[in-house]
Length: 157
Length: 417
Image (tube, rainbow over all chains, first blue to last red; front, side, top):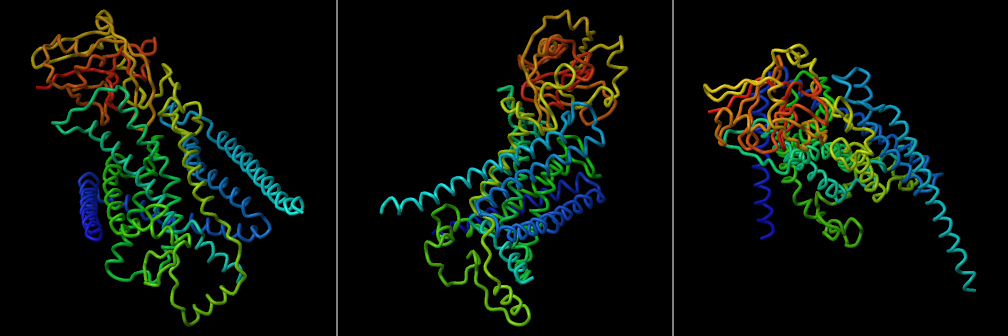
């Protein structure tokens, strides 16, 4: 029963999927010139290369490097720092193109009106501050729980 | 060297890289994709309605909310998709790379899914600040790719459905196995998280055994830490940009391409009078608004429009690019003008702007908007005469419509038969 339900669901999903792909391709050939379609395909290929071939290996290198450094740093601290770097990096990925586009000029002054470079610097400072605070909090908790462990047997004695 | 390779192996098999995590993030990403798709369809048909389509004019903020969700969910997709791809990255190196023609098809569909999704959210983001560093048409490609992305999402879910079921909840069979709560059965199962492969012979096998001989490093990435990082990243990118669409978050808007309250009349501008080439025609003393219904025609100068009964409404300008802004508009009710030419409440309108060119120079307006009591031919905004960049001498403002259809620099209103 469960297996047949899953089979029906899978068939329906595949049909929807193929219909979507067909419709997408149809719209593409109807509305775009061949050279423009080629441009889209190049973008899709480039997106895969940039992610799988550049971003992910870089992250892997960073991961390996952190593992080496990690031998001297408590695990929790490493995790908190990684979290801070991830949040900052993802925000930067969204903001750096804005900074670049603003330097090229925008179609009118109400597009990209902020000082995104300054805001990004302040943002990183805030991330660093919060990360440091979280690490300090973590280390203090760890120390006090260790102390408690050490104190307990003596008080029991 | 041996230790370094061992670290790399461990990093690739980091704890967050497991099917349960892929399912958890995949679900969130699927929700974001479906939100984008649904709101995108709505926005598309508002701009290019089929003749039988009618839309709701209430609440007036409807489009402001749907398009705000469209853009905000699209921004949220960045951390979610990167997190999702992180959990499945080792799959890229699966061996053998291709097992069967069906497997090749599956891998190709995933490549298309990943590539199309990344392109879709990237060109969408760049469009929010009108940056088009490509030669294809943004609207057409964004429209076509939405079907490609949703189509390949459906296929992806179909392919992975047994695994999704195994890892759906905390207490699903697969999730418990992953936590070591039940013994992993020995049946060969593609979904098993760390399928123990047969000993590899030859040079590769020797290298692997040599690497495995290195002292086991401490784990350096935690599952909970990973989930928290993805969650905090998503919350952060939303909190610091969604203020362009949602007033409650505007104090935290430090990264969005648009900021509420900027620009002439304290209102951001999409297309300027200069870009629309109306700098001369919009201020010409000869300007008059022509309203026609078949052979009945009325022509009104700005002074004549100002002499008619004026109505004040609070309506948002809600741009396709996601930003929006509430404003106070003052002008003449459109339906009163339409009554002057004897239009029927079932009839729509064709609006023509003074713009020299552009996709929105001539647009249609359905009767539900034309005869709504809050639709105005606006002459003032926020207590001042319309700025030329906001459509002086007269512009349309209707509830729940995309900004590009709130025609600026009005020239002609023609009732359609």
